[in-house]
Length: 286
Ligand SMILES: C[S@@+](CC[C@H](N)C(=O)[O-])C[C@H]1O[C@@H](n2cnc3c(N)ncnc32)[C@H](O)[C@@H]1O
Image 1 (cartoon, rainbow, N blue to C red):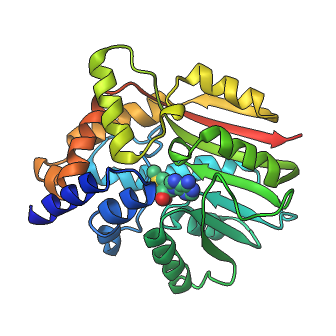
Image 2: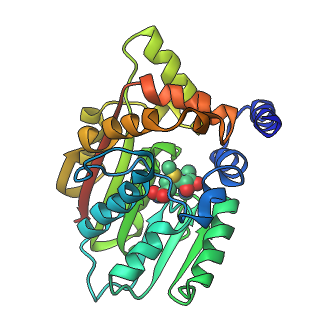
């Protein structure tokens, strides 16, 4: 409890205004990473389509199903020289892709020093560091040359990027011609009433979501169409991701709500009542 309070005070003092702070100080050393003895940490809401019962342990299966969905859609080829995962969390999806596909070289990009260090250590432990590394940097200013990347994957991270449109411009810059983006993303919809506004604000503050990224699925599609990528597949995944995630959230034992820290518990309320949606898109650079 004292730990929770000190984290919350630290967050409020810093005005909660950097994503790295959120992930390093609040998530990293308290929550998901601490559970890594039993499960390699993944930080997404999961893809629940073929999961029959939504019980607490199933989140790990749903996380892996999300990796499967997004990586299969990236259509890896033996000719690929460079694959990147933007907002790669703790490198869990990088391990998934390297185990499953014959990928020569993979990089992750993450703004969080805690996750970058953790992920690189993990890749080394798994004997994968000759094939992959996580680079500390931002999705909105990628440390990659123009037209140098074959495939980009990004799972549930673009809603943080300042802004999502800047990220999409970067994707177009760094992808080779014919290169593919497979993107899964949380959509925080425009609030329609004062209550929704309150919950959206709590998510924006606690998870650092720029106001420019708050818009509905239809507007997201328009942004994608404008950015110059050819859309190969686009799917709204509210029923497969956000709705079951909420069920999972409430199905957990009551004690879990106070396990990580107070702030995350409060943020959870925003997640429960704000209007959310989810999107998976596969697009090609023309
Ligand atoms: C919800 S987590 C998803 C992590 C991972 N993709 C997964 O599914 O486990 C969002 C991730 O985006 C990263 N992130 C946030 N803003 C970023 C930015 N501007 N550039 C790169 N990574 C960023 C966070 O540090 C975090 O790892």
